[in-house]
Amino acid sequence: MTTSDSTQGSTGSVISALASFFIPGLGQLLQARLLRAAFFFVTVGVLYWSIVGWPFGALVHLWAIVDAATFKPR
Image 1 (cartoon, helix red, strand yellow):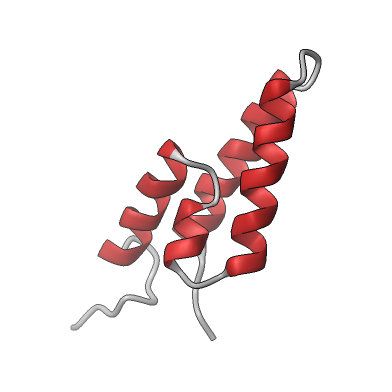
Image 2 (cartoon, rainbow, N blue to C red):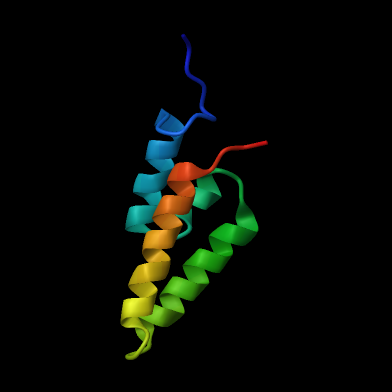
C-alpha cells in the first residue's frame, strides 16, 4: 500500500496545516490556492485586530487549519 500527497494525513497536508497554524492562509498558499489563502489571511487579520472580532478570528483561524489539513486536490 502506498500513500500519496493527496491522502488525508499525508506529509503535505500536515505541513500545510502547521503553516496555517502559524500564519492563517499560508497552508492554502503552499497548496497553490491563492484566493482561499488571501481570504483567510485578510479575514483573520481584520477580525483579530477588531476588539469584538477576536473570538470569531480564532474560529476562522481554526477553519483555515482544518481546511489546509483536509484539502484533497481533484
